[in-house]
Amino acid sequence: MLNASLKELAARLSAGKLSSVDLTGEFLKRIKALNPRLNAFITVDEAASLAEARAADALRAAGRATPLTGIPIAWKDIFCTRGWLTTCGSKILSNFVSPYDAHVVERLKAAGTVSLGKTNMDEFAMGSSNETSFYGPVKNPWDERAVPGGSSGGSAAAVAARLAPAATGTDTGGSIRQPAALCGISGIKPTYGVVSRYGMIAFASSLDQGGPMAKSAEDLAWLLNAMAGFDQRDSTSLNREPEDDGRDLERPLTGLRIGLPREYFAEGLAADVAKAVDVAIAECRKLGATTVEVSLPKTRLSVPAYYVLAPAEASSNLARFDGVRYGYRAPRYSDLMDMYRKTRAEGFGAEVKRRILIGTYVLSHGYYDAYYLQAQKLRRLIADDFRKAFEACDVIMGPTSPTTAFNLGERTADPVQMYLSDIYTIAVNLAGLPGMSIPCGFGDKGRPVGLQIVGNYFAEAKMLNVAHRYQKATDWHLRLPPNI
Ligand code: GLN
View 1: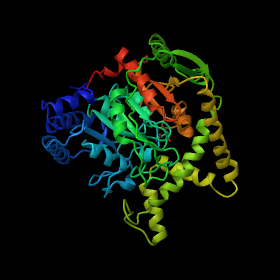
View 2 (view 1 turned 45 degrees about the vertical axis):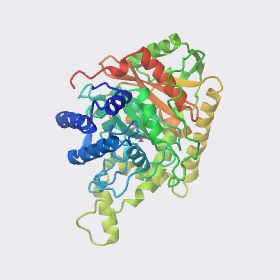
View 3 (view 1 turned 30 degrees about the vertical axis):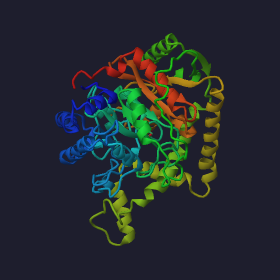
């Protein structure tokens, strides 16, 4: 049951062997038992979840079920969910009950999924370890001394510890892929514009993209099909013909060209991660793929470019949190300006303030050309790197993260060290490409290693194909943390 795929769960639900109420109840029980240790959920509401499960069972009884009807899903707390607390991991939204559903939530609910709760995350998705959350850090189910990665660390830990069959995440610079890697699960960040950002609390709008986190590529395909789609309320949502991202899952890998970026296997990559990734690539060769070296020479510059652009956008997006209409408001103040100041000083954590300061600085008169404009030019060059690489290969493969999960507290004192956790993921967001991570073994400390697969624009079906064939030949995605 813990390892049942969405397809298996759907089959049992549709055969009447399982009700959504029982299935949801099972996961709520696991959350009750394990969440006090892991802190993966910020909000759980058993009565609300069971009411949704009963409604799903009723839909099925009425013959109006889709395959996902009755399947429970956890929402990253960045997604607005009607009637549920939606905090974004921040004190400033610690009292915000959303009056509406995000587009992604609407779509999955329309498919009949049941809300299991809201998962913990780095404050406003700024972080790589879940340690910036106002609600405290999440523990990695594989080793509770370790971080789960971030910012979708609660979702990753929930799926890894089987507190939920699947979850949603968002990825601005790696926040789906890096926690998926550190927790030994699968996650995909779609091509920018494929999933609507409506109701997904904005961090850096030109980079943010929602996506599913689950046990396997097959599950991801099911979820992505339900999540993706045009939405006129997001001006960057793409109006494309709907496609089935699971259509190529079973296609053999014969003839597939895998590009291995020289820069992803160089200095900075931990030996244990390199070893597991090499073995995974050898496995893909056995499955019929060929490999070719490619180069992404601007990799080194992706982190500095991102840490100009993302804070610039964040400084603008976060201006709306001012204590006026919703969210936290400082209890004592003298006038309006003082209310703004105190609300933001008390409501935001240190990392969020650092980003707002950096963002405001790089957009200031006199610095705009020196920083912001330069970073925008770099962004174009980084996208060009990928364009050239994809002339020689169909997908790019490499490590998702340079190391396995690090210990809680290990990198909090040094932001630059923390930022480098995303050295292999950030360029993908800057280019707007789809990227995913799947488990491919364990490092020296017994902590999971993630294999990153990057595709060309709209190559989600191909990436899921590669991942699925790999998962059919291996069982890393079915391994369970020892103490859960
Ligand atoms: N770790 C990166 C950051 O802190 C990326 C976070 C994300 O993808 N949301 O900005």
